[in-house]
Amino acid sequence: MLKIETLHIMDSTWNFSPASQATIDQETLYRMASMAENLNNNNREAIIGEFKRITAEDMELIWPYLLREPGRTTDFSYAGVLMWVDYFNYEYLIYDDTLFIKGVVESDLSKPAFSLPVGKLSLKESVRLLQDYCDAHDITLEFSAVPEYALADMEALSPLRVEELTDWGDYLYAAEPLATVAGKKMSKKRNHVHQFEREYTDWKAIPLTPENAGDALKFMDLFDLEGDNTDMAKAERELSRNLISRVMDGD
Image (cartoon, rainbow, N blue to C red; front, side, top):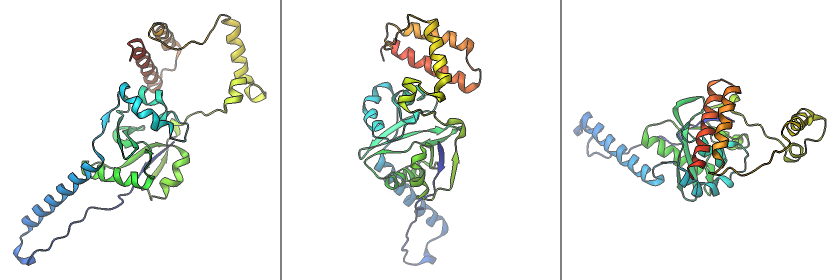
């Protein structure tokens, strides 16, 4: 996945037509420029609106847009958004049948960043609107976790910087080999499956519900004892536990 910091598409400009340049002092010019900038920023802010914190209730509205995103990264999945909403401070707005998500940079949680917009608007128009929003709020426009398929379109907009997020890549498998675990390349996974089947002969797959979510939380307690102890791994397990707790509460 990629982190992309964009150029300003157009800097703010103001035109003045005083009767005589000599009759207007510097303080007045500064005041006029400030008034023009505030008016310009207020107009920009009204165009796209304000971002709202993502909640479980909002996912019904957001999900149809996520389905329109052609990539396969977890950043655009239902559980991926809802699970990481608190960690990445996800907010959203929908404008002109296009979903915009605002969060933070994966490698620097102090910096705001945007996901790839999804919907009716072209990438160029979406970026222009976000640039206006960022100018109005005095923040730098930056995109994070951009899927690789969108890199060429992003680069066409002349970004200042493109950085690969090597620690945030997703593993993608073809469905059929993973389902059948057939062939030499899948031998290790096939051995794990067979070992599991020998040890747990009465296993079954069932939906996660409020009634059985407590059992899933007990599993997470065991997983904590055996799992990776890196900060990110511990954070991911805690977010998984929070998601299961929401199911238990009926959210």
